Length: 107
Length: 113
Image (cartoon, rainbow over all chains, first blue to last red; front, side, top):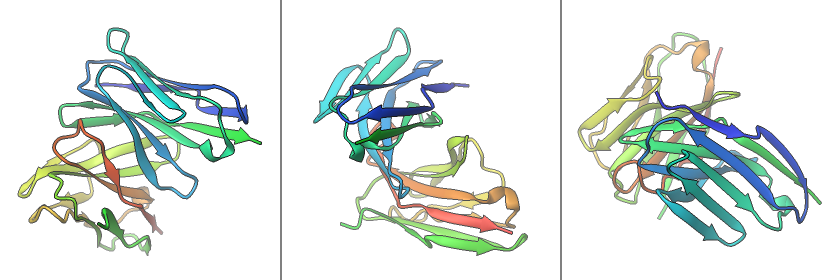
């Protein structure tokens, strides 16, 4: 069974700080997703990765297939980035989620 | 496009009652899935479907039934509600297979007393 571990569980930052959230998984995957869940509960997909690196605005996601590790970086963090960030791996038709990282960015 | 819609948004049931959570999508996505989200547990897959007429079990299928008679709809049925099924339920879709970007519905908050 694939386990997906995220760290840290909780993260508090000051506006403008560079943030990193980590995700490790235990078996080979076909894709890794980063999701964002806002305080109102809605979930949106940020990135889908199978290799390398992707960038969207201030968000950067990287994956190292050999080390079974992915990171989500937020540059110049802002209070509107406050949310739960969830790592999700896909292996065939099975999906496994991390427990999420609660990020709070203070002004 | 409405995207992924779920109804109802909130529901309170008594133990033993049955109900159906509705999920509909207008994006012609083949892959649809149901998750439950509980504090400290993350999202867990209940059932999924790779196309009309095809369903399969996820990680926590007990107590739930699904069917997929059309591409658009994927209802989740609770046969006899139990307090352990108190949770927030999310429906999600993908164009083809689970390796693509997922689109989530707004969620249904269910309380079983």
